[in-house]
Each structure stands twice: as C-alpha cells, then as structure tokens.
Image 1 (spheres, rainbow, N blue to C red):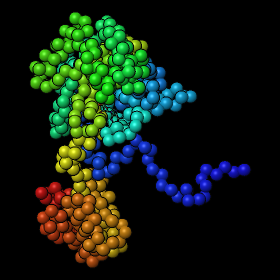
Image 2 (image 1 turned 180 degrees about the vertical axis):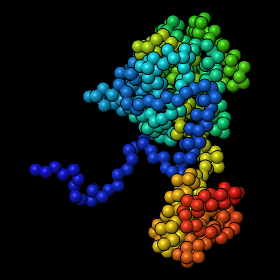
Image 3 (image 1 turned 135 degrees about the vertical axis):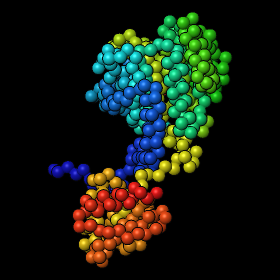
Image 4 (image 1 turned 60 degrees about the vertical axis):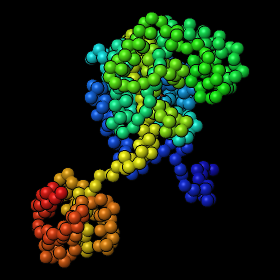
Length: 437
Ligand code: HAM
C-alpha cells in the first residue's frame, strides 16, 4: 500500500510555522545585526583577536566534559541526536577549545586571542530575550594567566556595549580554584543541610548535585536562605585572593566600574577564579547581556596542554532588544539603491534591462520593475527602495535618444543622452551619480 505523507484534507494547506523558540531575522532587522557584528569585530580586532569559525555539531561528550554533567544545560537543555552521540552546540567555548587543541594552535603563538560569532542552541522555555536558537559574539584568550588579561577582557566587553550606545553594570566574583573551592563547597553543603526546607525544589536537588548553583537562584525563598551563607570571598586561597585583588586593581586602572557579586557562580562548571556578568534591569527576567570567566583547568581536562584561558560571550538577541528599546538608534536603513530604471514600453524595458545589469557589473546598486506598471507606480517603487536617482525611459525617449534622470532627493530632472553602447552609457551615468550629492 502506498504511504501518504500528506492527508489530502485541509491540514495539507495549513501554514508551516517556525519552531517555538526559533526566530527569523527579517530583512529590516538585519542591518542592526550587521551593525552589532561590525562593532564587535572592530573592537575584538583592536584587542588583537582573530576570528575562528566553528561547526554547529560536536560530539556530545565535549559538552558533558566541559560544561559539566550536573548543569542545567547538559542535564536538560541540549539538542542531542542520541544515537549519533552528537549535539548542537549550546555555547561556543567548548567548541573553540576543541578546535584549539585539535589544531595545536598554541604551537603557533603562546597566547591566542580568538573570537567567533554564531548561533547556539538550548532547549529552554522561550520568553523575552530567551530563545532556543540564539546568537553569541564570543571572545577567548588562551595561554595567559595574568590578571591584566581578565581586566582587559572585561574592558573589551564594556567597550562593546559603550560603542553600541548601551550601558550595563559589570558584576565580578572569584570562584577560587580546585585548591580552595572544595573546602568552600563543604562549608556551603553543611550550611544548606539544615535549611533545605526553605529552598525551592530545584535548589533542594542542586544542594546535593551542584550546591554552588543555589547561591544564584533568583527565587525569594532561596535568596533569603543564602543571604547568611558562607561567602566564597572568605574562602579564597592566598593565590586566588591575590589574583582577584589584582584583577580589581587593573579594572580601576582602566577606569572600568564594577561591583562585587559574591553570589555569582555561573551556570557552567568549567570556571575557576574570575567570573563576570554584564547585567541590565531593562530586559525583565533576562538580566545578563553577557557573561564569562576564567577556565584555567579546562583545556587540560579536554585532553589539551596545561594552559589557562578566559573569555566571555554576549547574547546578540539581548543586544538587539536593548538597541530597539533605545528607539531611533535601532533604525538602520538598509542599503539604498544608486539607480532605479523606470521603463515604459517593451523596447525601453529591454534597454533598461541591459543597463541595470551593466551598472551592477560596475559595482552600482541598480533595480527596475519588469511588470509593466505605470510610471507613477514605478516612481513609488523607486522611493520605497530609497533610490538616489531614477532614470525615466520610454520607447519615445529611446527614439529621441534622450531619457530623464531624476535626483530623488532634490527632485531635479535633467536630460540624459542615451548611447548606442550600453557600456558607455553606464560610465556616463556613474559619473553623474558620483558627482551628485
Ligand atoms: P552564558 O552565560 O551561558 O555563557 O551565555 C552568555 C550570554 O549568552 C548570556 O549572558 C546571554 O546574553 C546569552 N544567552 C544565553 N542563553 C540564551 C538564550 N537561551 N537566549 C538568548 N540569549 C542567551 C556562555 O555561554 C559561556 N560560553 C561564556 C564564556 C565564554 N565563558 C568563557 N568564555
């Protein structure tokens, strides 16, 4: 019996919509995205970062080993093809380090500064500023342990926000190292042990599996419990203490303002020492615009050399929302047309067709309409495409070898001599267009 994929009923004609949490970025929004990418690239390059492009699919084990088995991301948010053992990346750091190790990039240069831009995937509950496919600009510095680098990266993130015209608060913390954190963890577990009743269901579970995460739960009951909890700041070993003090003094030196948030622990397990977040009150529940930190043991843990690393990522959807909320700065017109050819009559249309192609070959943005609409309709279309000039051309004009060139801004109209050779005609038009304001 043949298999029917579609029932020939009404259902066949239902519109197919995008998956929940996956969003189209429409042409009118794209200039804003390109603007953000452009500013990010420019700033990252000022700090000596080079772009790296990475695959979207990786072996599941990569994320389990780096982000951590007991994190929300790995436990319940990854898009995994179970039988193939592969996962759509939920973040960029693990993939970037996998590539770094695989290609032995440290051999080329002891300190590598890299950045990447692209989509990430997490199966979270969608809401404003939280999607299942979202985009990050991500920067990482590998091979440097100095506190100057920590402060420099935060300054770079701050510069990105400032140059986009946004402001956010920078919160910093230190999560210590494998030397001092276990003792802090023990003290925290002991503290939480007697107070489980006051915690939310998730945190009751976390207090066993990932107790530090309880510290940054946003629920009121949990906040009350952790208010009196031991502070990681009091548990840092002398080396971590000194590193974090120097990070703060370097931030002061660079004029970057920040505040200490001793409850910040981050949702990924790979962090050591410095962690930071850029937060805003303008995005409802999704306060973090960007976040990052140091991961000094991670490269070795992934089978690479014993090298330290630090990085951060900004969520592009959140940057877009903030820029849109800041009104006119979000209005970035798409590229305008240099010339629109409004042709009337079949011969004029064919002439215009060749002319538009010739102009495009010579680097201009040119357009025309093929549907034989009235001059009025074509002029409207030229205005909609923000054309700087329109060449009005009918079969009669072709006969007389003179068309009309209209400057759409000044509305001035001048005769334009048509040439037998379209190439010549293009060059003449380009001259006039480039001379015009
Ligand atoms: P993260 O805190 O998981 O860190 O994500 C960084 C940023 O990505 C967040 O601050 C937020 O702006 C954005 N983001 C995260 N999830 C979503 C979502 N579902 N929808 C929209 N935006 C989202 C990391 O990913 C680390 N890899 C950062 C890092 C780089 N650490 C060291 N190097």
